[in-house]
Image (cartoon, rainbow, N blue to C red; front, side, top):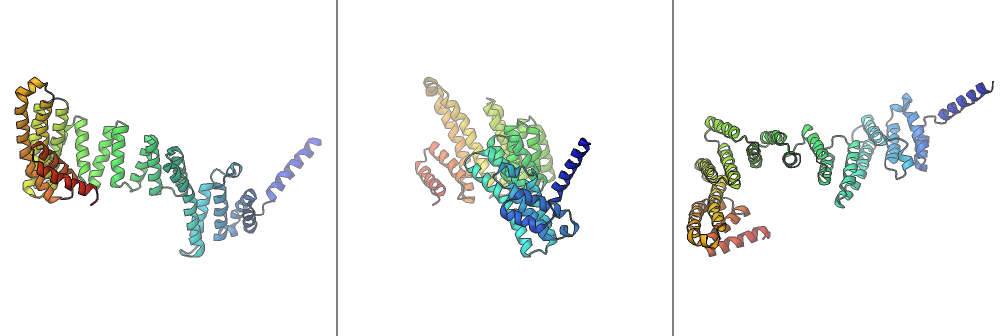
Amino acid sequence: MKKVFLFMVCALSIQLAHAQYKGSVGKAESNLAKGNLEAAKGEIDAAVAIEKNATKSRTWFTMGKIYQAIATSNNASVTALDDQAIEKAAEAYQKTKSLEKEGSPTYYLAEQNIDDLWGSFINVGGDAYSNEDFATAYDQFVTALRVKPGDSLTTYYAAAAAQQQGEFQNALDRYYEMIENGDGSNDVLSTVAYLERAEMNNNEKALEVVQMARELYPDDDKFAKEEINLLIAMDKVEDARTKLEAEIERDPNNISLRLNLGIMYDNLGSSLISDGKIDEGRDAYQKALSAYGKAVEIEAGNFIGLYNYGVVYVNLGKIYLDQARDMDLKTYQEKGPALVEKAQEELKKGLPYLEKAHEVEPQDADVLRAMYQVYQQLKMNEKAEETYNKIEAIEGGH
């Protein structure tokens, strides 16, 4: 009999515990105002379960405010009331908006509160990022995504924080989310390709991203260069050459194709020379000159063709200069002057193309720097000084 009595007392206690929340929106608001969030939560949870309350924007707006207060509380015992408070607050505000006419005061307030909730995490994350506490920044930005799932700006912040933290897979996961959501900007794709290649050592994946970027941004030359660099690194030069030459055959006046072929041989030449394969490198450079020359024939004022054509000759000259610099004094006295003369001959061939490129793009500092180096090597001191002053004016913002 005693056991039965105890059971009845327990059952009564449970009923009383549930009975204390009537589902009053007014009581929920009152408890919120008093800071009694546990009671406020109990009332509003009961209120939204009542059909007549669930059709009113006031109910959902109050729920949003209560869960927002729980989510942003500095008291661990309060945030422990519901580990989904962030999502529930955002969902309640969205429900409020669905029950209101767009532009109404309540609609506006619900929208504003979503932004405030999101902003509370973004601001903390931003401060942490500024202080180079990238782990905290990442956590805060990911939390902000719980308010605005899929938000491109927040996703980008999270990716950048993870990248700075050295958590490259986390960064890539976020960047790929942006790409899948149609937010793969030029810079995002460039960053993803870099991370895959340089940090994850995944050239195959980097190549996929670069080829995607080329389709989305066909006028951006850097992706063509990156694709060629990757193909060379993956020992797929022949694939790149075959592909480009086939496309050129179909469209012989396509300047971009000619330039891409030139860039491929240009990069190959640099790679071969770095490996000590001088003759093979020179041969690749000559093929680059042929491709750039065709581009300039098609369009006489093509900046990339002119600039790259000139730079190839600078690189050809550098081969001789490097050989001369590596000689000991006795050998240099015998053979060095002849090598320097050969270098100067190459530089003289390239200089007119650099000067023409400068005429096309007078504010391009890279062209001016290349011209300055050539003028110095050719002892054209007045030209060198004039070019140096132009560089200073551009880079100094004058």
